[in-house]
Image 1 (cartoon, helix red, strand yellow):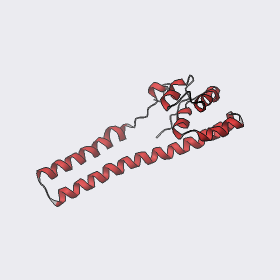
Image 2 (cartoon, helix red, strand yellow):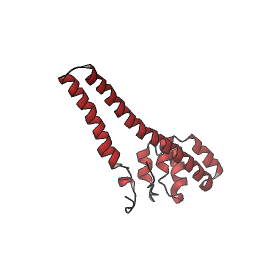
Image 3 (cartoon, helix red, strand yellow):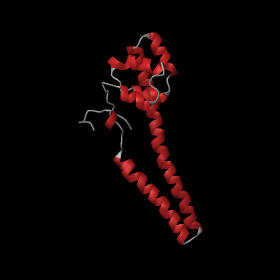
Image 4 (spheres, rainbow, N blue to C red):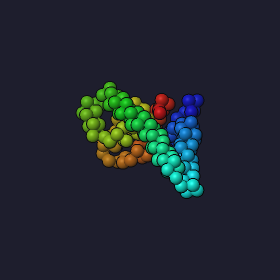
Length: 145
């Protein structure tokens, strides 16, 4: 992805080791534990279901917690960017933007940021997909988790 110009069509981040190895292995392990328990019920097999469920939950928490931290950092970066690029009054109004909208607006170039923020604040761009699709000059983010 580093060699390709990032756009709305290709900006989704897939982490192959996580999405295509760790998650499937954890889910297969959980299903396997249930099948094993059904075939030969017992305390050990029952306990393995509990451990397998805990591993699935732990795996998902590791991912979602990293994404939450990333979202907080993006929010901070974008607020600093707003202070540098926008009129003070507009930068202050951006405090009312939902985190998802701030995250979507991070892809906007400096030149079109003010126009897009005004559209979002006016309610003409409602959800994150609309915001991302409205961006003409995409500012790639290749440092995502």
